[in-house]
Length: 128
Image 1 (spheres, helix red, strand yellow):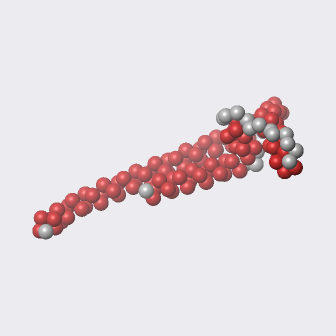
Image 2: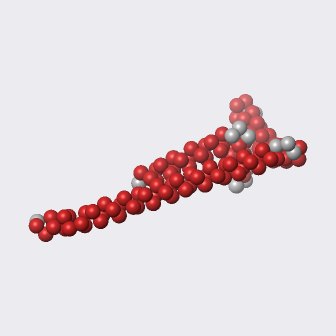
Image 3: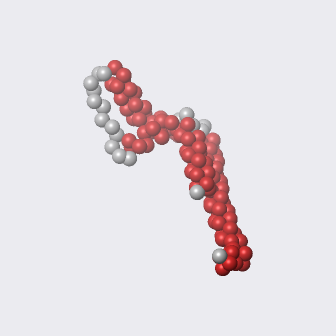
């Protein structure tokens, strides 16, 4: 028992606490860096959108990219809600996963959702 007590009083406990404290600080710095990188990426994307907002070519390109997804969503919605029996097929991978992101990006919801997910992930990693 005396030997065990001497281990704790000889600085082993302090070294262990210092180790875990430094580990937690590194995790917090990593989470902070990830959030700052996400914010910087959003600023850059916003700057590009603002710089190209007046170009009719960009508006046309955006319209042409979104058009197939909007048509698909409307056809699926009509078939589902009214039971028309059209059996609209899903887009092939990876477009099936991108469809919602592309449509939500028009409303800014996708960007906000990704930000919330990034912050939640950073907080969760910090608590581990």
